[in-house]
Length: 283
Image (tube, rainbow, N blue to C red; front, side, top):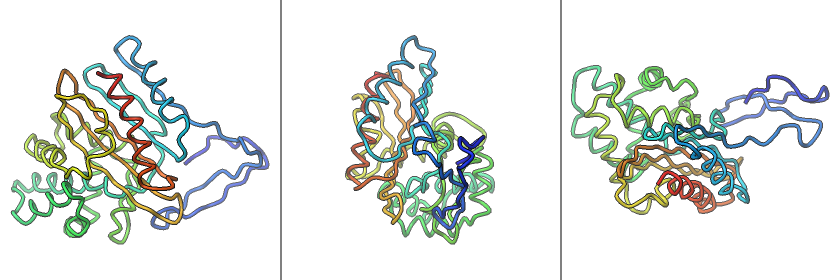
């Protein structure tokens, strides 16, 4: 949260605690409307699509409370949309995709397959969002390996949660989109087998956790999803959804991170409004 310049000489910087004791400067403005509300930004190789997406995503968020960050990338039409792309959010369970990617990246470096124990933990972590399995893998990997993967993946804005609080990892839409791009196309960080394994588990998420970005996905499109939700005393509910969608001539991915939600279901509704607009426009 940086300001290139202060909009008022009477503005002052105050430090606030976020997540695991992270201190960040915040602009305490003397005037109420010191900062402009960020707007959706889209680009596309397909004529008219960027303007349509910008309009429809903006409309979907028009009467929603909360703070929402959006990332969209469609390989087919070379379309990108962003909103609050570099704002940091507590990851909640969306970090579990990063944990699995780190595990596979590290195994590849040591030229080994996952053990049956690791496979069992990984499946529970992604398909059921099992916290105990996640804590076990997080401790096994350790911060050095997790940071090693983040560096290899170019996820420079992601800060792992301290003291094994993996759910307080700070993440941004920019980095989550980088991760989803790695998972969905050939690269040197994750092997093809690793990518296929991550997508397989994200496709097998239990029905009660398949909300969010898959909402409104066209039939015939294969859906891969991982969601996260966490309530804290500040900023209310964090509700997030990562999704990748493939088929019917489409190959796209979406990250929607939200906080300041009054309830979990309110956050889900906000995400699904954005997702429906995006699926409709791309289809």
